Length: 287
Image (tube, rainbow, N blue to C red; front, side, top):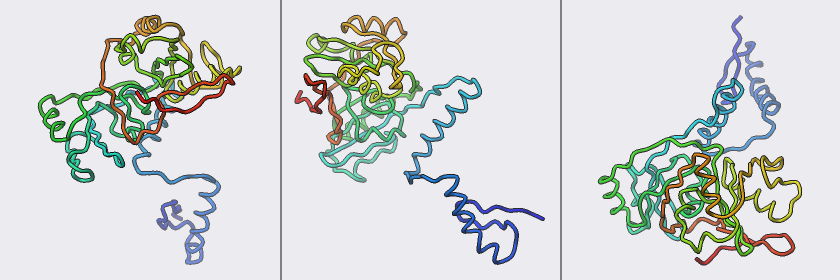
């Protein structure tokens, strides 16, 4: 006797036969899904790519294969007004589909599937889930399209795990993480203070850990791997000392000056003010 199973998509696939059994299939599917997936959430279709990526990383590690598969980055355009933002592959980008033609635009080399680009874009600090490289802007899309045709920037592949982040603590302010090349290009007056070099997969992990340390959380380690956070502290010291540590770690420290550009929809503060009672205050700097 042929056996069939009805999947959760609702397709009828006869299990035993007979009209009554087929009628009962819907209850079997409901009970099966409740037992196998008691909690679930509905997401956008492109979220599947991220989940598949993490699953492949887990399988690689279980089978002793190298983890940290690089991601492919391409030229990505972002355009925004004070109330809306859009982004996507620069090739075929059309601002007029959703925004006025004079909307501010930039072009970066980024993962087009990184959904944090829209609400976390900041050229001065690492805030997006995956790293991007500034290429052009700001300006109108008409000018951006001309630059794109003239320069034809190539894509690349970069690692997204075990990234190195530089954090600055000065005047009771802990600043968001920076990439090595961006930090290396800072002017003298932005180098003062104590710097920390951390290894983490995401900038938010590095920032959250260092903030806890500075607030006196005893369970967070100040060196090596932290048992509370997915973070490793490499070193702490002056700006120059941390740049030297980056060089020793094989990180590219060629200074990359970038214009100060920030999406108006980005709500992540560039720094937190630490208070004397070991708390912190969210505050957006004016400059």
